[in-house]
Image (cartoon, rainbow, N blue to C red; front, side, top):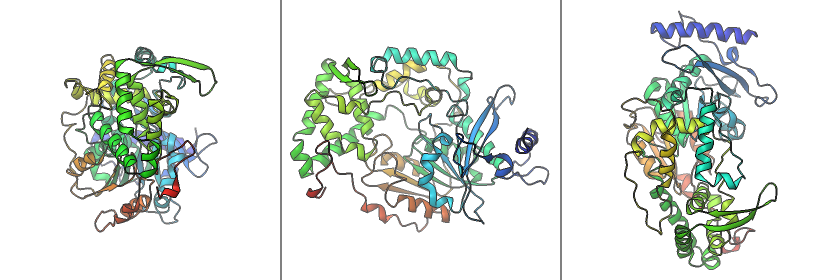
Length: 494
C-alpha cells in the first residue's frame, strides 16, 4: 500500500468515527485535514492528464447504514497554477443525469483555465457514472434496427438493471451530494465554489440545501428547478425553441429565400409522420451497410430537438426540415443518436424514477395537436421504465424551492430548448444574492460563449454578483443559418 493510500485509509476511519460522534468535519481532534496531495497522486497514463492529480475516494453505497459495499469515487483535481492559490476550489458538476465529471474533465478544463490560475479545479465522477461504479447500459449507437424500437430499448434496460452490482435505490442526487461533501472533507477544503451545468444545477442546488455552509459561491448554467416537472415541460420548451429558430429563419433574407415556407413544411412533415411511419433507406454511418426501417414521428422530433441544444447545430434546422419535406431524413437522423455512450443510463433512471416519476406519473397526458412539435410520449416511455426500476427515497421537501443567501450567478441561453430562461427566473427567486443573466444567441450551455467565461471568472474571484457587469453578452448573436451543406452565405451579413 502506498504512503498516500495509507494516509487516506487511516484518516477515513477517523473521519467516520468523528461523523458518528457528531464532531466538526473540518478538524479532527485539533489536527488539520490532509491536503489534496496527501490523498491523490499524479495521474497515470490513461487515468488522466499529466498536469492533474488522480485517485479514488471510497464511500459507503448505503450512507445511512455505513456498512456493506463501498463505491470508489473517481476524482481528478487540476491544481491551481499560482504559488499562493486561493483555498476554495471550483467543484464542477456536469449534466445528464449520467455523465461523469472526472470522465469529462480533459474536455471541460479549458473552459475554466483562468479560474485555475488561482483555484484548484475538482472533478468527481458522481456515484453511478464514469469510474464510480458506472451504471452503463450500452447500445450500438448505429444499430437503428434496435435503437429505434421502444420495445428493444425497454428490454435492454431491464437486462442491464438485472446485471448491475448495485442497489439502484441509492443512486439519487441527495445521496450523491453527501458523497461530494465527503470528498470535500477528504481533500481538505473548508469551503468550495460550485459550477453546475444542466442536471448539474440540480445537483448544485441539492448541495446548497444540504451543505450550503461550505459553499462560497455557485454558478448555475441552464438551471433546473427542483420543482420542474421533467419531462412534462419538454413540449412547451421545445416548441418555444423551434419557433424561435423558424422566426429567425423567416427574418433572414438568405434563409428565407433558400427555405421558403419552412414553418408550413415542418408542420406537413409532422402530420405525415403522425398518420403513419415513413420508410427510410440510408447507409450505416460506420459500416456503409444499407439500412431500411420505418421512421416514426417521435424519432424525427427527438432528433430535431437534439439539434436545437446547440445554436451551431440549430443553424442546420431549416435545411434539415427542407430535406425531410422532400423525403430525405438522413441529415436529421445524424442528430438522433439514441444511445449516448457518455451517459450511464442506470444512474439516469435511478435519478429520474426517484426524483421525477412520483410527480409526472400522476399527471394527465395532454393530447398534443397534430401540428405540435414534441408531445408527452417521452413521459410515457419513462413511466414504462420506472414501473420496474428500483426506486429510492427523497426528502419530503425535495420539490420545494431551494432558498439560500450564497452568492449565485444564474446563466440561461436565450434559445435553450430544455432549460430556457423562465426556469432560471424560477431558481433565482429562492436565491437572495443571485444575478440571472440571459445570454442571447446561445442555446443549452452558455459557459463557453463569448465573454461568459470572463464573467464567471470575475464572479468567482470576487465571490459576489454585486457590481458584476454582464452587458458584454448583448454582443452575442445566433449562428448564421446554413443555406447549403457548405455553410451560410456570409456576404448577406448573416
